[in-house]
Image (cartoon, rainbow, N blue to C red; front, side, top):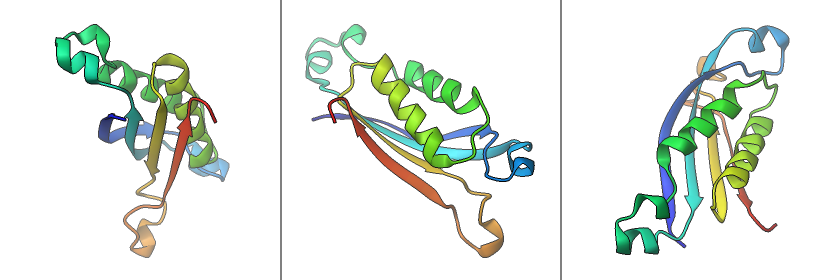
Length: 120
């Protein structure tokens, strides 16, 4: 299966377990891979036969910023569910990084990675 990728999506969100952390916006970085058969689009050069990258970005941004999240796991889960609901993709892989979370411990970023498929 083919994959469409968005790399290094930077978003400012409210995220964290303690309420004081959630009250201060912070940056997350997201990598997204979706499985989608691009063959027909590639053969015809027809935009209507592929997945719109900008529309996917809009969905990711909307879900990430529509509420305050405690856990990156919850945010990733909701992003994957929205992408599967709104686009004709077979699966979504989300790598969600939170660079500031352990910066004082010399960790580039803690992250969660999930893969969700349309059927199971």
